Length: 109
Length: 114
Picture (cartoon, rainbow over the protein chains, first blue to last red):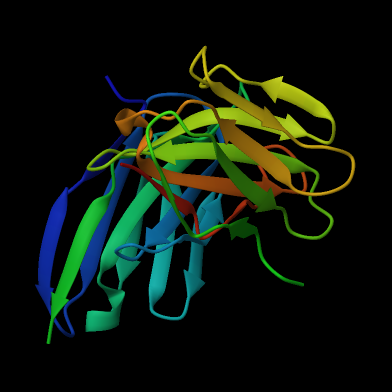
């Protein structure tokens, strides 16, 4: 069983739609990260969360530490948001991230 | 302040050759992590280094793979006698502290073994 589970695996949306990607984890963590990877591209860190909520432009990330759950929301989605979104956690013990398998988002014009 | 720089972006090697992947962390970052992304799979931890020290190499294959982060210069991930199964994207991340701080990722090196 993976320490980090994401859903959905694949998501297709019309331009302008509100999008939610979910992440659940099973270990105690010190922080959770949302990452973005474009096809064939590098990885960009979108957010790092240890509690509450963060907003950056049209992106919003929330975390509920008690429920071990985080969500990434995209408002007014745009085709350029098409990418793989990856949830990663920093466990309380150990030196590595644990990664979800990613959510592949396609936004259709 | 340039981000995490990895080079080369693409690397093609024949079976049996050596591959050297370089990662220059962000200025001021002394923690480097290497991850491998196999085709159609998620990212997997390989090794965590601080300057001149390997802190955790629990994700490194036991043979042919090694990593270093010298006092001066980039971190190097070295793969000897490459095989087709080594074909993957290798990502480096750096942070000023351990993973409960902001981590920044490089663009990755895509290794193809032919």
